[in-house]
Length: 195
Image (tube, rainbow, N blue to C red; front, side, top):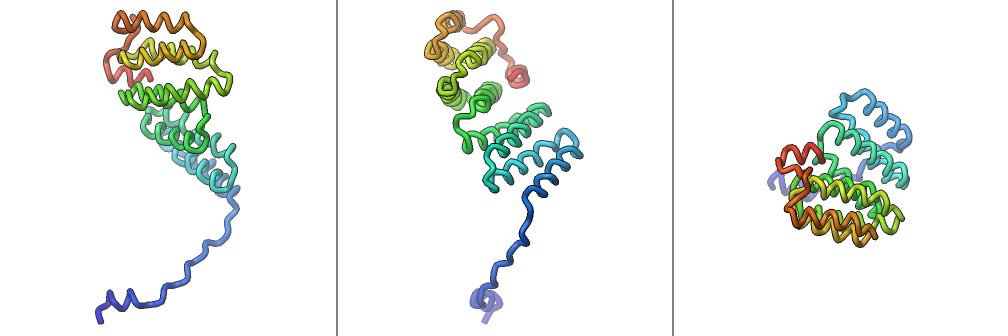
């Protein structure tokens, strides 16, 4: 018999149990790691702390850690890493208004127009359910002001109408007719940096 067949026939070992851990102690360790780490690496322990809280059943704390991770990652220019954590938040809490706004901005900056339109739709719906229309109108108007994408401009105008802000929608429709606003950012790198 070959070594492989002998290995396949042997009785499986009992799985080793990890010694029980206090997840609060692990959380403290992630906090300490984030404090010690250079800014470029602070997002990882905060993200892992969010994962730990989620596994422990503390969804509220998980969302807080994920939010902090996004802030650190965006502050360091790590937009794609921030997008990954933001998508994790949406899986855990689909009504996260701020996160849907962030994802829409990140999509615009990365020229992911299909997902920008999807996140815009979800952002508007979540803002309505959360009675945050007055905050959403400013963000959507700002997005429309800088994007050169006509399809997004049209969707932004429709969204503003849907939220009940006809004057803002009319302004964006003027930008559609003109091809863009006077403040449009056409350089992809500049738009990514702005978003």
